[in-house]
Image (cartoon, rainbow, N blue to C red):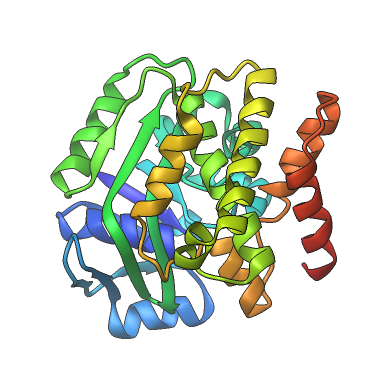
Length: 303
């Protein structure tokens, strides 16, 4: 399979790297220090579950026009960058190409669909905690990564089966759910609550989930997002809050979501993609979501 990874941070680096390790033709689009590191030292992945490995040499391009047509594009940028990046991906897409956004949030596919057409864009969820140690160096923490992918109309297409097979062969558990929109919102509920409370408290997941006060905040944030999803016609599982808390309990104690890491490092974060989206959708639906609103108002001046 011919693949393009646009942006080689944590997610793009990990999933692009694991496909390259399996023998797929993966083309990485990067600039600056990341491009230089990939050319000089290759792409280094550290993982206690899927194993450490090095992809070297790496096919690196600075201009997507140099790549040519591909079967799969993985945009490895932040969610708030997708509206700018989307038009650049057109140069690599043909009639049957698929674009698989794995960004946090619930608007990634809509941003890409405006630029590329909805037929090219899949829904995707990455269940993984990983981060960029340095340019060209990604570390994965925690359980075995899992991908959830689907067409927007939830049909099981030929290209969906091909992608599932490719990722499964690469060692990534890959699921095709009955409803991809429920899967996206389920991840949104988890990552928004953990990111919001974790960033406001300034502590890692281990402390976040064990202190009674912060665990209650997590639960209240999740419950509000569950209410919001139902108001929008997204029928999450009846046990979504307790099952999500169980998942959080299974994560490494030192883990932190990317939004929290970005705040700590003084970089632009996914605050707008996560908490601001909850606040805006809640206001439109005339819902009272006090915990998420307060988290948003607390963090916004610090962004």
